[in-house]
Amino acid sequence: MSTISIVNARIIDPATGYDEAGNILIEDGRISAFGPNVEARGDIIDAEGHICAPGLIDMRVSTGEPGRENRETILTAAKAAAAGGVTSIVIMPETDPVIDDMSLVDFITRRAEEAPVNVYAAGALTKGLDGQTLTEIGLMTEAGAVMFSNGTRPIADAQIMRRTLSYSASFNALIANRAIEPSLSKDAVAHESDLSSRLGLAGAPAAAERIMAERDVALAELTGGRLLIDMISSAEALEVVRRAKSRDLEIACSVSINHLALNEVDIGDYRTFAKLDPPLREESDRLALLKGINDGTIDVIVSNHDPRPAGEKRLPYSEASTGAVGLELLLAAGLSQVADGRLDLMAFLAAVTSNPANLLGLESGLIKIGAPADLIIFDPDRPWVCDSDALLSRSKNTPLDGRRMTGRNHKTICQGRVVFDSSL
Image 1 (tube, rainbow, N blue to C red):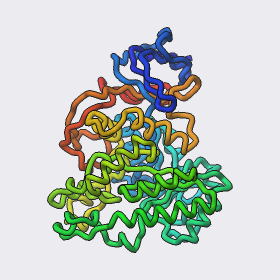
Image 2 (image 1 turned 90 degrees about the horizontal axis):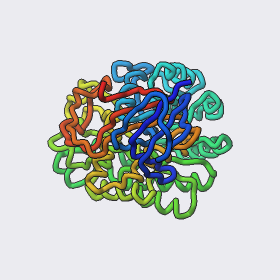
Image 3 (image 1 turned 180 degrees about the vertical axis):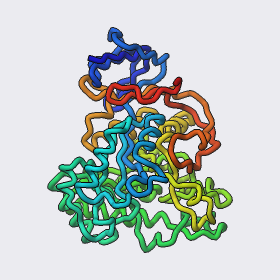
Image 4 (image 1 turned 120 degrees about the horizontal axis):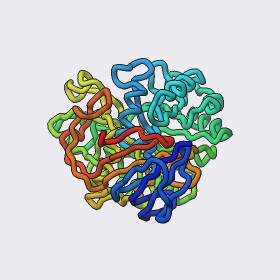
């Protein structure tokens, strides 16, 4: 029986609000005791007064595998996740072939056996992500899919979305849809604003998010389906979610860490590494989203890890691919906002641990006796500078390159095994 003790830690469990100095005892991959009076046994890990919290759960990770392994494999993504303090990742279905049946979910599950962290699959909502032909959500749920998404492509047809939510309700499946009204966002490469006008870039208005969010909230209310409004980026969409939650609807929403750390000014002089989907918006939107985390309106923060080779980014702005890597930066970028006084530490940790665990029905995401020992030890005050060349991800595309950060992960433990140690 393997036994590990984490000693001299500031233990934080966002699920319960627990925040106290103490030790954690891990036996056979699970937490067997924690608190100030726990006696250390077995192998000792000295946290040196740093924070020990549940490992992060990232609900939106894109890889190239299967089909485009030059971008990222499941294994390289998992290693990057471990370095960043992420112990569970959900793979988006936009692969080649698309994860739209049981066999592809099973493929992800089998590949996950080699990974240092927990890897789950998100099943596609429609065949080939065509937005029209519903997949077998029930069968993919049985195969292990933890949620369902149409990737970056929203389901534009309201009748199809209604059927999807109705069908999924019988399985209690979580349905994620992007808040994008396609006709208002067609060919857009930036946020519609004075800045995009000066740069001559086609822009998508924030209203495009609000319109789709309002439609999906209405359909969720009509059908009783579980809805995740995926990666909002504007104050307008946030208000839609806030009103829906005031009516006790089963609605959740997520936001990308990029939209909490950056705004439209960061695209600078056509800086393609800051070309994201959804586009970076105004500073007022960023501040509203941070407030939405603090007051609980926004449930989940994701990395939106989307690796792209340099050849896809080093192009004219309108031609360059969207996307940024984020698995290794999710924790640090959030802690940097905590250090700036914009983000509450407990609210941030809840949005990357217990909240996604609750939505996905996972055992992890909390510090509890009997729970899986998926834990991280991090220094919330450590200053460092992001160097994209040092990232473990196969692709290095990040708008945070060269940015001063505060807070860094030291150790990652997944299922009771140390899978990352910064001292090694």
